[in-house]
Length: 113
Length: 113
Image 1 (cartoon, rainbow over the protein chains, first blue to last red):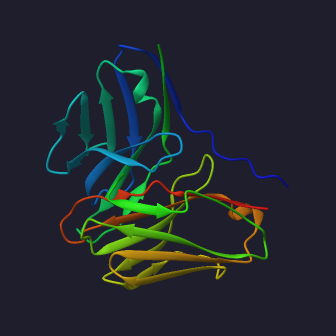
Image 2 (cartoon, chains in turn brown, red):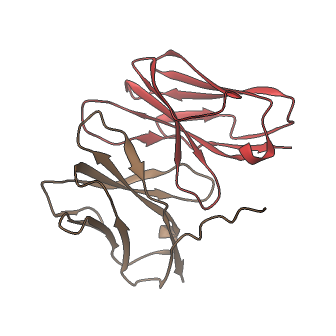
């Protein structure tokens, strides 16, 4: 029979609002986490990363929060702009610097002018 | 243009054709990856090359054949593909051992007819 694809989580916000995108991870040994942004027709682009010895890291208009107790990662985008519309992926690396990244399924962010 | 270049950007091929995807990284990284991205699915790791040696083949059908002649170049040779192989094929590179994430190319959009 026909297979049905996953429905990606979606988030719609108004321009100027703050956006929060969430990600749950499964490996308690993961020591490094990254957020990627993928615009239509392009490959994923690095946004911000955080190591497991931190619980917060800030970049330009973006903040990543890590809660190791509940294995949760979030990306906050301040003053969201239409150019922020994209699919956002979290990725985790399990335990060693040689460990490969495991990617989440992604969240579609749509910013309305 | 990112430090990882993929060609061609778009490819349409028949099921009996043979074609190759090319990836080149200009970052001095020692590891390269092929990922498959299908609609509404997480990124699927296909192959990993570390210092030109294949270290992972993620149960990929033999109609996909990777080649890594040196640490800067990676190919994916395609032969007798199926329509369900239509997807975005992403190449990435990283510097294993430094604890940083991947840099992705823009991908090749493959359509099998």
